[in-house]
Image (cartoon, rainbow, N blue to C red; front, side, top):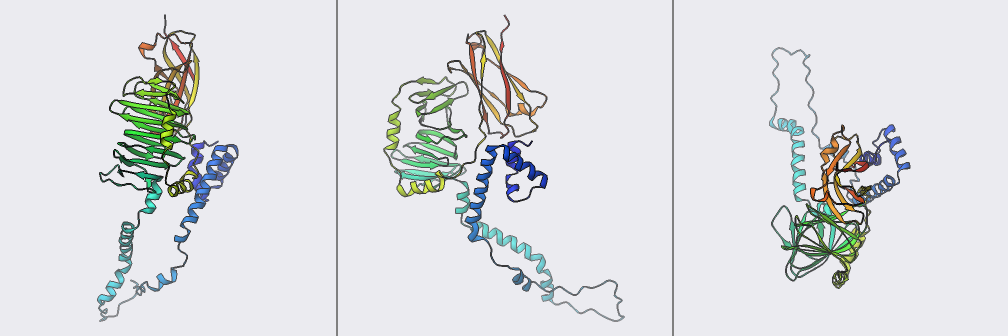
Length: 428
């Protein structure tokens, strides 16, 4: 039985009718047994039909065979080496025009390549921008500028502008920006802020303040800051970052904040404050609704909002493969020196996802975190790994460990199936 990853790689070939009979039978059998791949196949078929309709007006309708054949030069009469020459016969001199005509078949392909390059350089960039588009500016007020991460040229950002991947946005003291992303996600970026839009599910806030309303879906939404990362599935929250640290205020849902050393899970009405390398401080019962009221006090442009909802908010989102795995490990209040992870080796040689390991006590209070590099899963001779417990926590007497394994897709999309997690005690 083929895996879901293998089936996804064959989707386009199936739509183009390029699969062999055996592959086609295996593909259709998998779809009958896997609802997730069936939904993804329906989305792929829908996108293919939409693309066929959108580019229908640009499709060539006429047959150019006759016009091309009419303008091709006639072929010279072939000279056979077996024909006996007549004594005293001298071949006629070839004119320059005939020589030029004989070289036309050689220069025509070169000329076509040059013309194609010129057309590509002069072609409008709107199609390329649309292909990389991830959202729309629904309101731009005050001093707001944007530019690509590869360059240093910033230009004024206007309402209804398209947001593409890898775009930097900065606001002045009186600047305010509202935008929507595929998902959908709606955001309010306040003054004196610098934000990079990596893609529709990842933002980097270098400085300033942003309020986000993220629609729930299987893919995680990430906000990076200089002091750590923020990961959510679907929630409303505000991020405020500056030289002194980063604060995250949650209106509803759950938000995971983490840095190199520790992490914390925030819920509605709580706030987390953290710096790089420090343990996040969590405050409960904060006035989080004020953040929501401030963000909702500014309304988007009606025309831009309608365009966003018709083109981006309603766009089909392919199901993602984000699958966190949770294990509860009993310790019987014995000191623990390490946590052992067991998994089932897969047949893939590369493309593995790494894994973040979050360890909490039975009350979900964070204890420590670790990271499993993707190269670990390439070695098919091993099926387990020991994650050491920090020395300052080995004496903690907890009755149960709550362990969450979250895939990190920066290195690849191949997930690992963990079968067992156990605690290794300290020998007395």
